[in-house]
Length: 264
Length: 264
DNA sequence: ACCTGAACACCGTTCAAGT
DNA sequence: ACCTGAACACCGTTCAAGT
Picture 1 (spheres, protein in one colour):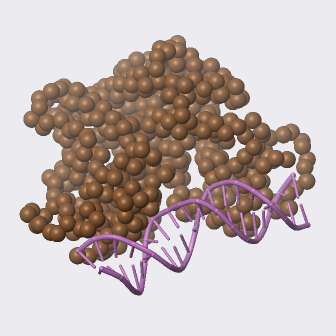
Picture 2 (cartoon, helix red, strand yellow; picture 1 turned 120 degrees about the vertical axis):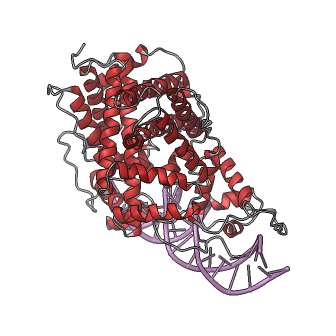
């Protein structure tokens, strides 16, 4: 067997997913091979990577740290993955497996299904805050993400969105969810790093900004907004903003061309 | 004078902008001090940082690389900035100075102004592709960004969006622009890395995906979409998608509570 | 006040060598 | 086939020392 990086190196084009060779230990039918001495395989490595990223974040992740976790030397990992970036792409698509695309035969209203899709994506991003940092680096055409995209297009079609507008509409929704979830995840991450609850961090931030920034007219305006939308927990505020913005989007799709649920 | 990192270290709370001390060489009225031997100051450092980030990207940027560019030892820079992250925040707000918020006394239709705001933000993000990577890491409350946020809220107010919905609406728009510009910038970056034009990369990617991915029904669907929206350059496709999605959003804002342009 | 050099504790990755 | 150790060319940052 040949090491994982034996692959045409077209810079900018390359991705784990375009590797012709099936990843070891996952695919090939009943190909019973001898277990490797260390019990290592792509699956176990990816799993450990996700666990480490969830626990300590993208910044602290390193090949050496991962190897230590696996009880192995840093270089062993390179037998199974070509490099760090490929491993991160694998990790990304692994958590994309948590996404729940709707059953294509389900006849629920397309708006409801679109909300579920968006909510599912948001939960993945917020639940694994390192994903947004990686989605901004990779093309991400892993199999799970692919399935999710396809399901989204299908929902749009059911909503009667004409084919030439499906791309733009999907784009509007998921780019929004990405941006939104990213800032939410970032805020939670910041709180965790500071050893504070999100609500404590929120109050502290507000106080600091009020005290230090010159343009405190903005601060007054934004506290008004806060107050206007109700003084609950930060998580509730995020949830409400998300739901509201998403409704804005869906209303916009309907108004600019989406049908009433009749596929065309 | 005291080095730049003499500041309360509240993890998670800290940011260059919350530093009480005015940044050297920028603020204090007519305080004529002797020039430093090397001609270094925060301004010049930030400028060189932006130039380097524009030229080589975030991944290749390092304090040592920057110092070399400035003809100075790596450690000199630390007299002016506390650490790499602070410097990056400075660079981020410097390019945020390119944003053009509308004149508050301008009476142009709020939808037009909102489009200008969004377009300006998009240009900044795409023109400096490293910014999206940083915006996903920092709170980013630098003065230029602050001014831009304030202007956006003002436009919403003029559009008659009620106060409790301004936050969500702004969020919907700018999170969308961020996500969209990010994937656009990413694609351009990838092309540059590969030494291809964006259109070449686009054709190659399509070919590869068609050849390698099993779920090529998706491919068929997506080429149909491509064809449906016209077969021009990638830049034009991005431009059209952006404009369309933005219109969807604005229509949504109008339908869900925005007025007809009458401030309230 | 400002700048340097040496040092510390890390990185990702290559490569020749082991079993 | 799989794993290791040593090595290369880097990092960010601290710290004591120079001028």
